[in-house]
Image 1 (cartoon, rainbow, N blue to C red):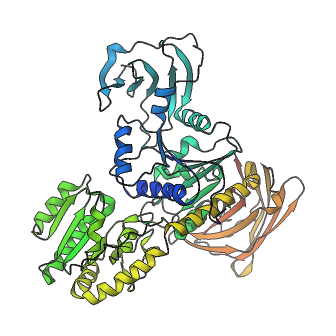
Image 2: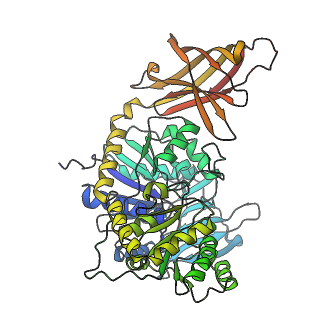
Image 3: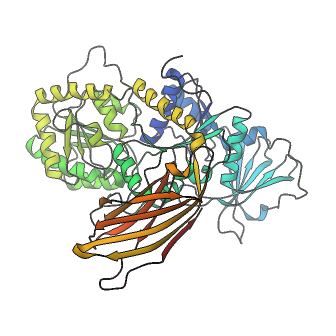
Length: 592
């Protein structure tokens, strides 16, 4: 067996959709599965949970582009039940209600077969959908959920037999999703369920059963501006972070993001880091020279990419080097705004929007620079693709990724976010110096080689094996009760603190004595954290006696945290007011 062979089991990767004009997240998902299939000795499946009528065409297109291989199945939950039905469930005695009077439209597959009927009953807040078999009869009635938002996916889903009888009901899409996973796994001993969509996680995690190992891969930034660890969490990610305890592994692309999550939610034992891989392309047989005037961007035309900054910077480049050109490959909602910006700056001869091109990466073999001006990223695949083709990257130093990929001044340049003038200066330096481009090009290729498929496979094998080995150590906190028995100020601004923490929890293999308790002073304005000395003694019945004495800074808040393998809990401790009596008896309780 190869030292990087993956543990045995069923490998399932879950996404809402796999579009053919895929962005970085979808490309990374497909690349991971190609590595698993071609080098890891497993036959993975990619599961999609969103409705679409054109999956046959998508499969063919993805195969032609090499994004899918014959070893990888692309499955869809709607197709599965359209073809296989509900496993012989008996009718409940209820007939499917006739909604014909409220019909809006009927949708068909690309070859004209019946696919879906859409209704809008007068008493419904959302559309209702009947999904159809090949003969036009419904097999599923489901309300619209809008899973791209923060819908909880609750509502009655009716399973329909061939004769129009209701053969069962589900209470949520999560119940349906988990049923499908269990059907796919069948009697297999073990299954690894990878979740690449933050919108899927709330409907799968937690999932009962020791056979199921839940692994979430976070692909993007979870924070709102100003992007400190304690900044507001974006709504969809709140639901993800609240379910860390139910995951066997939560994998981030950078250590910085893992550490930011650990500061917020606890440094639990199920946090891991694996960067996106890059498939090193073979250079052309006769590598063409780099164009000293060419700069390239590969990006969706969306606000996150901040392409107006790139256009503004390029105006300054053109003032210095009139023959310079910027090609922007991609499509999105900001196309007209970007066209207007190009016209306003009179850059029509220098900046071109090239639209979506599946072969756009080939331009990186001849470009002298690649620009990344995003407000935030998770770990941009476009920069890795650029460096693998020897194209130096000039990037904003944002969370997360560019700093982990680029060594400033060696294989590219990092620029403070929003510094358009320095961005333009760095691009100009490259275009003026083919020697600098050649030196950075060679260094960029060497950097990219460190993140190749073999390294990625080894990292994933380590994480998946750890998930298997630690399954019996998983914990669940049922109830925590904290009582602050003493908190008083002493001389020299010191605080004397004592308390009792009572914990009720369960684990097959982890004792409460392995849990970690910590006390920290946190400056919410700056995000600074100071760990404070804390003594904790475990007594019978899951009771911890706590003592701490520390020099106090009243500008900070005090956080007490309990971390037990994959589970964590914390509470803030309120200080006594200056000149008040010794503070005691404060309580904080949590039930899980």
